[in-house]
Length: 340
Ligand code: L14
Image (cartoon, rainbow, N blue to C red; front, side):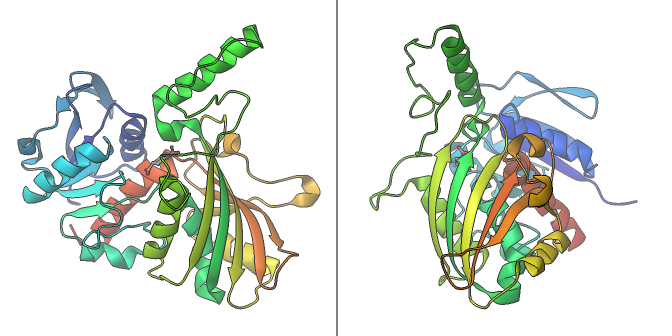
């Protein structure tokens, strides 16, 4: 009999937490005991796992007794307190918040890209930022084949990244403006009006003029590729899309590679899919990618402005690829590699 594991999902009532539960079911993850946890605010609500209803319990240090795997997505502040507590109880935490990503003691993992780093964990493993995760996937085979010196990326990020309140805000503003184009809009969760607009700010600003989200892409890409020479300049933009982040990515490779070769490499890379047929008008959009596990790549072309330059368009379901699925794939990888 294959081994089964006691698994908790902390943040079980949030968008990513719910997605984690769905992905555990879909992947038929070997769950023995299932424990949904949340902060005090949403504890007591119900979730369903494999047809059975569970009451979400409030996370306390002793909640992790006997739990082997913890998928955390209840915010950085909760992870800061609870992840070390869980680790103390022998629970391996796969943390989806930004709390530990750049901690040198904590591996930052996209399982198809840097699985070798998982074994260095000391109880906590970090899931990267969603925009970074979907970008490094199709870039990995190019990186391995010809090297990448620099990445310039602009993101078009869905409102779900900022939580269910942000999605609701987008629809409310849209309805209000459809009813009355002159309606006064006051932004609440997203920094500016998001309906019929785009907002070049995700997370707060840092001293160098980049936002935290943009600096996450810089720092996390370098950590995942274990390469502090790779240069990354990101502009992260919120767009009125519910699910699915898109990215216009420009790279400069060390050696030359043809577009045909890039298409072949990405198509052969696990969980990546090339949707790229300009003659037929085929390329991925977030609507096509929502609910899917793959990272979709289109618009692959040679950059006419520089030597060894390539442009491409990368789209993925931010709640899945960038969060829930990545976490479950890390756990699966640990089982396959007998690390748990
Ligand atoms: O760092 O699209 O994990 O709002 C994930 C969602 C950052 C913001 C993270 C978004 C967050 C992102």
